[in-house]
Amino acid sequence: MREAREAIRQGDIPGVQLRRRQDLALGPAEAWRWLVEPERLCLWLAEEARIAGDREEELLLRITGDRGEPVRERGRILGTIPATLWVLSFERLEAGWTAPTRLTLRLAATPAGCELDVLQEGFQRLPLSLGLTAWESYRVRWRTALARLAAAVPLRSA
Image 1 (cartoon, rainbow, N blue to C red):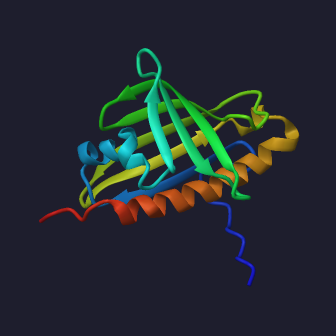
Image 2 (cartoon, helix red, strand yellow):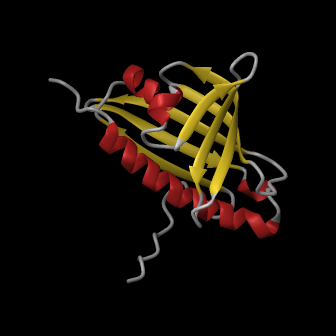
């Protein structure tokens, strides 16, 4: 059975940027830990995660690609506001990317916890043969990862 194709969502510009949002039953300070601690990232985003560099300026991830192959990704940290904002220059290594994308993870408090807003943009700077394919791959990746994150976080205590 073939999976139905997902409709383009508000905030998505095919081949340019994609946006995903996920409500979490955690306050921003606790949710922040799920974004920046490698052992928590391994529960929802990647098989392996580590912070590297002399000043801990890089996030290195290993995932399983669309065809079951190992894939390495790197996010160079451009800026952070703890419990609010994490901005990375993000790229898939060994994939022929000529420019990284910009990945912005933003947390906003809500009455039930917080909302994680993921914005990845700059796919149009990739080679034409790669841009739309990479965009579609990350669209599926973020949908799946955010669902895993929502399932992994502990329920907020009353």
